[in-house]
Each structure stands twice: as C-alpha cells, then as structure tokens.
Image (tube, rainbow, N blue to C red; front, side):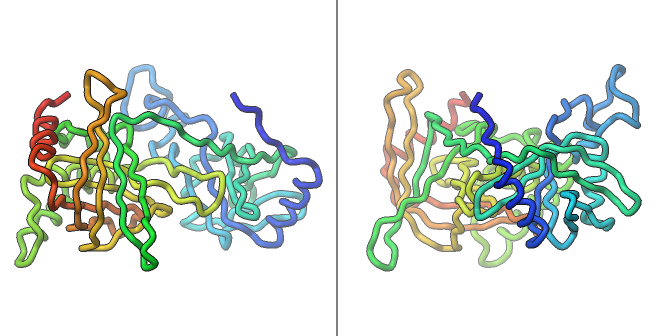
Length: 323
C-alpha cells in the first residue's frame, strides 16, 4: 500500500487558515463501510439491534455546502442544524473521512463525528493527508472512443470506459436494479416508454437498453473523488448491441448534445484470445438523453448509422451468446 502523504505542520496551518477564511464545502464519508448485514437492507437473526444498525443511506458520501459550515479558530467544524446537515446524523459517533480541495489539490482527514449543543461537529486532527492520485490501468475486454473535429479542425477523442458491474453483451434484467429503488426505476421506465410512443418520439426498439438506463440513473453509487479538482471522469459504457451504445455520465464527465454526431470506435476482445481485438468503426448520433430531475447523472443513447454488415452480425451474435 502506498504511504500516506501527510501535510507538514506549516502546510496544515495554512490549510486551517484556508478553511476558516474561505469556508469551503466538504464531503463526509464513513471511513469503515458497514457490511450489508449491518445496514437495514436485510434482516438476519444475528444482525445488530435497531439502535446499532446503520441505515443503507449511511454508506454513501454526503456533500455539505460551505454555507452549512462554521470553522472555529480551534480547528473545529460546526455543522448547522438543518435539513442538509441532518443527512449525516447517522455518522454521529462514527469515524468519518472528510474530503475537500485546497488550491485544486484533494485533501482529507479522518476524525469522529461528534455532538454539541446546537448540532454536529468535526474536530480537525493533527494529520491531514493528500488524496492519492490513483491512475487505473485496466485491460478491459471492451472499450470505446467517440471522436469528432473541433471548430479548428483538430481531432478530439472522448474515452468511454465500461463499469465492472454492468455486463456487456448480456441481456439486461429487471432484477439488476437495486430493490429499494425499483419503484423509482419503474416510474422512470414508464415515462420513457410513453415518451417514445408520443408523436415524433424516437423509436426505442425492444427497449432492453432502457433497463440499464433506469438502473444507472437510480443507482445510489459512491461519488468517485478525483485527486485533482476539475479532472473529468470518462463516460461509462452501460450497454451495447448491434444498434445502440448507451453511455452514462456523472457531473465531471463530458456532456453530449441531442442529435450530435460522432465517429465511434469499439474494441472487443476475442473470447479465446484476450490479446486479439476486433475493432469496429461507425458513425453515430445521440438519439436520446435521459436523466432524473434530482440527479446530476445522465444517460446518452447513441444510434449506429453506417456500421459494416459483418460488424452488425458480429455484435448481434455476441449479444445472443449470453456469456
């Protein structure tokens, strides 16, 4: 494990001064994530008591805006008692990780969420660390790139990276969607289908790709912090078949526009020889954009236009393999 990069005493004092003067937003996360049986997702005979059990929401980070915080000279962060800060009430008495940015560099410290007369408090400890810049080098079995020319005629490439839990070339199933958000997902799916049936709506074909759209938009995923503020995350490949490519974004990812055109390059590993790649190219257009009102996540559905017949056949057969 890489050694933690701790700030020096002088650097810590500068950061404390920055926190006091600028009152920056912070993100609070449980340092030790509870296992599933410690949450209220399931009941077991040997599960903790109601007082000890953590709600499922407690495993997700909570972003606290600067206006909800007051930083004292002693290095204590007070949280105002309102609806926003009550989201972290389940962290009381727990060890938490507090993350924020200082001059665009990600920093964090580990402390305990404490109670005081007017609400909750976080004591800044002696040690503050720099966030590790983890560059992931993953040899995916599938990857994709969108490309286009900018106004100056320069080629621009957009990386699209698969999500590990989203199995490509496998028919999506409803039970992939987390049980506690299936009602929300069903409402979203019904609205998307109704929208497609309206006059002028875009055809959704068999609509299987919408299961992945609804899963992604309703999924309560952990926010992926970057060690450098403003660094864009790649678009996420959620679904692909011989007609469409579905991409997901979070707030720091590239934004695509409806009816925007791209060239797409798909690289697929051959099952028997992972080192051998089948490269498929086609033009494509953004035919639909889906989102939920209260989320920064979006899904872009791109339709292939002029893919070679042998590549269409290959993707269709690969989808039917169910591997």
